[in-house]
Length: 187
Image 1 (cartoon, helix red, strand yellow):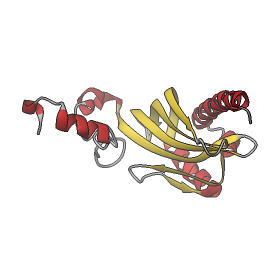
Image 2 (image 1 turned 45 degrees about the horizontal axis):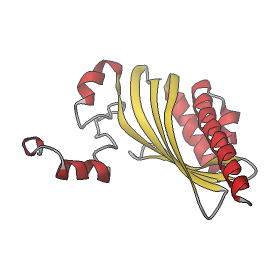
Image 3 (image 1 turned 90 degrees about the vertical axis):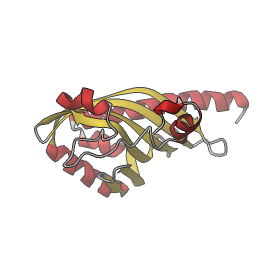
Image 4 (image 1 turned 30 degrees about the vertical axis):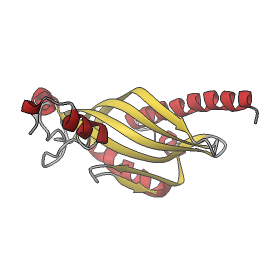
């Protein structure tokens, strides 16, 4: 491809990947199983950093979502910013990070969450999710939001409170703590 064709392909691919991400939110919120299924392939996988979600292959992914949908009531997902990075050696591969918020009813409890997806996308005629890793900043009952946001135990949507998956695990966060945080705030 010429440089112009490559640039055009990347622009079109970025738009298709953003649509893929939007279709994922729509499929989950609408419980549109055929649409959700169309976003993955046989070699795809979906996991959560806390280990609660794990779907390997198309059948495993759909089974995982079936179980999730059994305990979820209404849900709404919003994506915010998305970083897409194309593989310079392969025009049919890209990675991304998707920043999101969600509201959901899980087991009759209203929850709010802030999350990120670390994605890998592949193109086989159209773009699809090769992998999705879900990480939570927080996932808490709505009445606990204010208190939970100031706590390291920010995942409270399940039986026992757990730490948030980020930002404390990020090298940039720990580097900031080591080098820039005022000494009296270091613990």
